[in-house]
Length: 462
Image 1 (cartoon, rainbow, N blue to C red):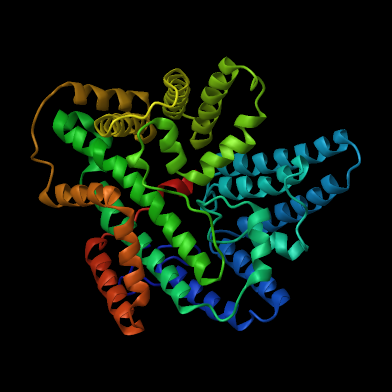
Image 2 (image 1 turned 180 degrees about the vertical axis):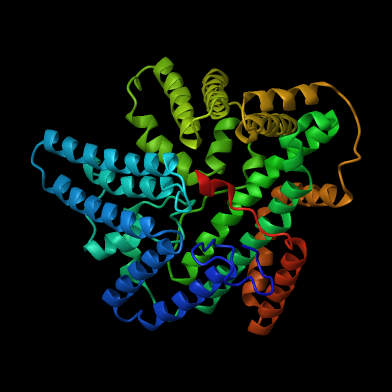
């Protein structure tokens, strides 16, 4: 669905991407109804649950049926785990939850049709509830409605951020009505930033070079392929962080705080730091619910091996394709080597020049790995690498617009964090008419840039 185009508002009857005008109408109605009911906690939870179901129904009736049913099952399982007297009984119930949620992931991976969008992020979020209770890290939530509203919270389901149910559920009882103007401004700012990242940067880079190069790399020079590889690194970042901004901003408008998912990842000076900055909630999930659950943690070799295994499984989760296996394996090896290097080096501080060199090296390692992440298959990845190795130089297919947007994308990534905060707070402090004008100008810019339509968010399919 296009962002805004005459006659296209209801172009798709069932699909409601979070970048569509339909979603903004849905969010606006949800905002008004939510705060009108804020003084009645039970009514709020009931409305949020209804909004969640409606959101899934706009994708498919399968979502509207599967998610509440699975959430009810997990709520019951969580209670049974908490009441169980023996470890064996607890293991039986937590295994049931794990099997059910992995089944949801597999079902949407092998299914076809308009409803087949992955339920991975729902399943990961749901498992935080039962596994945390099993480990003794959390207690069952207050009511079934707290659980249903939290585990199926509509901004987080399609691509995160993965939010622990134990952290989200208590927030429903701490709402302070009406929403503070500053919080409302921050929510709008995040949504606007997410839309700008998606349409003005990610989709522009994709349409104007990245897609064409990765589809037919042999038609382009080595320099053009390199530009496309850099372009994809920033396309993926702005696409996914754009979704995250919209999701977090939507939650802020409803008085809910979701965890951060990105923290300037291309500033990282090693691959371990990169994963502490990139897709933070998934990185934490893999660490807490997979890595620490693997055997062999007592030996250094076992820890190194588990890093590789964890990332290999993370690669396979992205898709049953050898390209994802290679991508996950490379990152696993990178993490293991980084940990070994840090153990050998100790706490010696690197120089400023050393940190800069490490950041450049880390970025290029990540960009190299993204080739396999993006490639359709290993042959396609080999063609990309062959063209890079050809050392041919031609720039006929690199438009000035692409070069400009790529430069802006890189500059924004390395812009001081304080600058971003100052811009955000300036927007928040501005009078409502000024905010409206800024949003209108952004909409016009998106309308002009994205006139050919918006691509689906990349991580939505995972």
